[in-house]
Structures are given as structure tokens and as C-alpha cells.
Image (tube, rainbow, N blue to C red; front, side, top):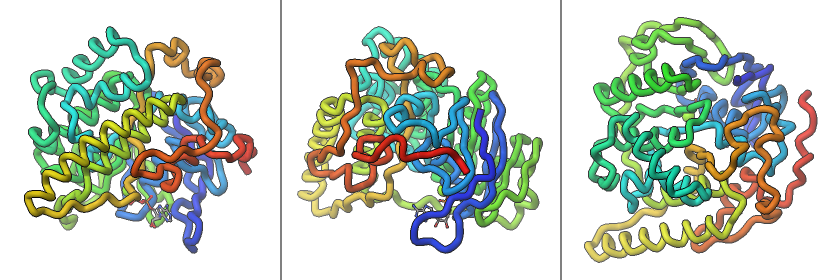
Length: 363
Ligand code: ADP
Ligand code: MG
């Protein structure tokens, strides 16, 4: 289902590879921890799986596709089969719980009937059925992560990637989230979770792949994480500019899943305008609003449009071709306030001028 073949990833301008000769295969239905210290290459692995990046050498295959051979224009459709959640939740602060989960479905053109069925189901799955109308700031951290998980799952992806999903949560809440992920896995979803937090890994007794300085040093079927007594807990960082980062994330999410950029533009304009009003209100109260760092550009979960009948079919790859009427634009567009092209998003989404076929056969 996910295969790394001797994968090396070297970022431009760095001397040491972030990943070096990484080789593993994850089977359908597995729950796998990707562990290692900060900087060991966990997020790099997840980005390769999402085809946000390609290996320098080696091959990554996901859901039967060699991602190097996957044309850029097909990437958004491929990503609909993969849900992702992150440490910082990335919810839209001006939308309710329900709207956060429904948002992607709406902008990718799912039918109202589908949305009305799928969103409450996803919220029930994560134990939030009574909180549909809450705003994110009215929820605890654990509840916010549950919303993010519901959003990632609303279209029933085959794979769920979780990058340090408990990194901002206290230990008790983290255990709840882990149990939720285990339950999701028990329902058949393949789960790959990156974490540096030892305790949960021990408790879960699942397969552990460990990275150290980009090299795989362990692949254990029923792993533990070794002696955990000396590992300090991280204090959650204050997320600055989280609102604007969430808006950007949402837009990228939409871009990933739709070739109709007018919808992207409308969604972004609406979200930014809401946030500008909120920011102005804060300013009047004398507080400083810190702009987001553009590095928070990892897109969140994909979704699948019910209007796309081929979307449930994973193989052959041709089955997820976009309908003929929707063609991706071939150049980046400039959106109000945020230059998405500048952030490299257009490239990753296959909206740039780059030739699709530039990704040749793997070495
Ligand atoms: P982890 O998620 O385990 O903390 P990462 O995959 O984020 O590790 O990073 C692995 C290594 O690659 C680190 O040394 C990091 O500094 C480097 N790295 C990650 N992303 C980039 C990038 N876009 N450009 C240059 N170096 C990067
Ligand atoms: Mg990371």
C-alpha cells in the first residue's frame, strides 16, 4: 500500500540527506508508528507519501502508483485517497465544527445530500456529535484534533497520515486521540503516525519504524520505543498566526482537490475577509496580530467528491482522471493578499508551468 524503495531525499542547499536509503513497505490495514527525534526525517517521509515532494533517488509507491510517474495534474485526485492530520490541527477559526468538516466537500462540489450524511457521521465517529455548532475556540485541544480527524476521514480515505497529532496535547488527551486512531485503524484504514513521543508507542504495541538522522534504524512489528523514562515531555508551543495559517491551509486543501480555481479564489477571499475583520477587532483592543509564517504550507486532509464516481476506485490509476470539463490551470494564479505561487503551492499542486513528464523513471 505504501512502499519506499531505497529512498534518499536531499534538500537543496543542505549537505546531509534528510532521508538516506529508506526502505519499507506498509500493508493495507496496518498501524505503523514512524518514530525518531526531531529532524530525523519523519515529516519528509510523509511529504513523499503525499507527493508534496519527490525523492532525490529511489522510489515511493502509494496505492499502486509510482509517485514519480504520477503526472502533476493527477496529484490532487491521488491525494483524495489520503487523509492527513497535523500537530497544530489547522481548523478554520471562523467556521463551526460542522463547517470545518463540510468545507472541502462543499468546494469540491459534493452534493448537499452527501454532505448532510457524511459530516454528522464523521463527527459521530470521533465523538463530537453534540458539538457541531461550536467554534474551534470553544473546544479543547483534544476536541479540535478530533475535528481535524473527522475532516480527514469524511471521505473515507484508505490511508490516514498523522504527523505528531498529539504534539500539542496533554498526556491524557493524547491517549484519547491514540485510541481514536486505533479505532479508525480497526475500521480498516491504514494509519501511519509520526511521533517522537515514546509513551504512546509503547502502549500501542504496533509496528515501529525508527529513523535516526534520516536512516532507518529499526522496523519492528510489535515495537516499543525503548526506555522512555528519560524522555521529557514537550511543552506545547504557542501557535502564532494560527488563524491565517489555517486559512492558507484550507485554500491549499481546496486547490488540491479541485481544478476549478474560481472556487478556490472565492473560498480564500471569504476566509481572509472574515479574518481581517477579526484581526481588526483585536487591533482595536491593542493587541498585536502576528502574521503567519509561510512555512506552514503542508496541506491537510483530502476529500473526495461524490460527484466523481470514479473516486472510490483506486486502481488502475486512470480511474481517478478528472472529468474532461475540469482541467487544471497551467500557470499559478495570484490570490488576494496571499501569493500562493510564491509559497511554492502552485508547484506542488501541479498548477505551475512545469512539464508533467519532468519526473522520469526512478533510478
Ligand atoms: P522530523 O519530521 O523527523 O522532525 P523532517 O523530515 O522535518 O524531520 O526533517 C529532516 C531533516 O531535513 C532536518 O534536518 C530538516 O532540517 C531538513 N529539512 C526538512 N525540510 C527541509 C526543507 N524544505 N529544506 C531543507 N531542509 C529541510
Ligand atoms: Mg516533523
